[in-house]
Structure formats: structure tokens, C-alpha cells
Length: 304
Image (cartoon, rainbow, N blue to C red; front, side):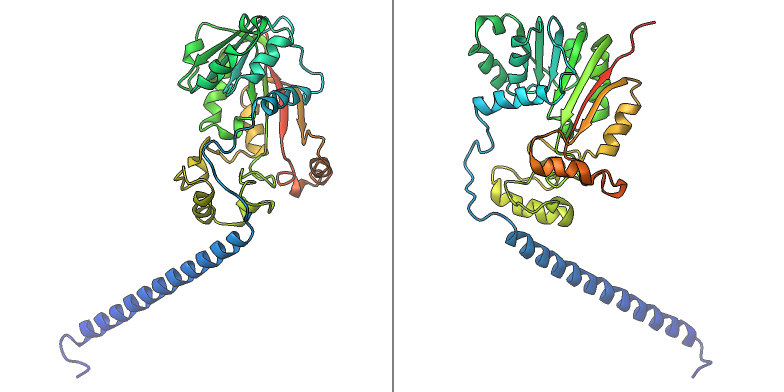
């Protein structure tokens, strides 16, 4: 009977059960929908990846000649804004140390390269001539640069590594600490995160902006086919790591340092595509997506 004791409670219970059932059904439908979207994305991403790739241990190494060419190109991209003769210089994240060697050849009187590993850099140093050996030193760091607490440098370099730093703000702070008053911080890197190749997955696909068009978990699942020696689940976990550095974030980091900007150039390259991007990026909405790289020099104010 409608007025019977407990009838209202039973009705409310029935409504609650029905509501719960609808929620469960909706969640199940959403799960099915997500699964279907994931399968579709995986299928489509597989279609745009290269088909003739074969992974071997050590894949990705450039070789001595290309490493040396990379160091020289890096310095040339500052377009005469750097004079290293007679200076003391620090290369943070020196890798194979070819930039250190080139700085010594150009007249830097003392060069220190720091790296978390350093083994390859030290081995390369042994192969250099006596002039370079006398001027270059390789130091292993834990990333804090505390090993250089008593040193001050005229020039501090960050080459092709800024987009890989897990804590770029902290690294910039430490680089400034070892920079003498009036010294210069030199940062050049690319590609930036929102650039066509910002995901560093060119070995997988030629599709521009693929890292922005496809879900991260889909890219990582496919990436393990190309890099079976890694088990990365995100861009931050890949070998070398990616911090998704955008041009806007880089500018914000450097603006907060108090350093004076002495040189700032983007899309520095002889490649026709990059040169065309330099024109397109003039449209404000497209600035981030059409900026491939940045080469900058920042000066530490002289002591009062």
C-alpha cells in the first residue's frame, strides 16, 4: 500500500539502485569508448611510422666527424657574437666533449666539461693533441655542479640539452652561480616542444607535430618497438628525458634570472623548411608551433 510503513524507504532504495546502475553503465560505456579510441589511435599511428627501421644497440650515435661538425655549427649559429679567445669556459652536459675541444682550439685558455657520465668525454680527450689536452678537463657531476663551487668562468655553455633538463630552473641557477660578474651564459638548443619535431621521434615517423597529435601512451607503446632497450611510459622517462620546453617557458625562466639579454635568435638554420618557419612564426598564434630552435647569450651584471 502507498501509505504502508517502509514503502518510502523501498522506493528511495529502488531509485538509488537505478541511479547506481545508470552510473555503472555510463562508466562501462566510457571505458569501451576510450578503448575504441585508443585502438584507433594505435592503428593510425602505426600507419604513419617508418617501416624499414631496424634497432641495434648503440643506435643514435653520430660518430666523431658529425659530433665535431655539430660543435662547430653550434658556435657558428651565434653569428659572431662570441669571442672565446683567452677565456675560461664551462660546458654543462658536455656529452662527448667535442664542444670543449673546439673551444680550446679557438683559444680558450681553460675549458671544463661536466657531465653525469663523462666516460666518453674522457676517452675522447685522450685522442686529442697535446695543445687541447693541456687546456681541457672533464669533471663528473651529480647534476648539481657542486664540484665547481670554487670556480668562476667567463663563459658557461649549454649545448643542445636544455630541453632534456629535469629541473631547468635549478640548472640555470647553478650555472649563474659559477659565472663571474660580467660573464656570459650561452644557451642554444632545439627542437622546442611545440615545434614539428619537438617529440624527438623523427626515427619513428616523419609526420610533423605527431607528438602533439597522438596520445602520449600510444606513442610510448609504439616507441618500445623502436627502442626495445627502454621501457619509457612518458616523454620524461625516455633516455635523456624531455621536459616539454616551450619558447614561452624558456623566456620566463630567463626573465626571472636578472641576466641581460645580449643575443637572441630563433629558427637559426640553413635548412629551407626552418627558414620558411621563421616567416610563419611572425603570426602570433603560430609562434610556438613554428619556432624550431633558440640561440641566446645572457650577461651577468658586473659587481657594483
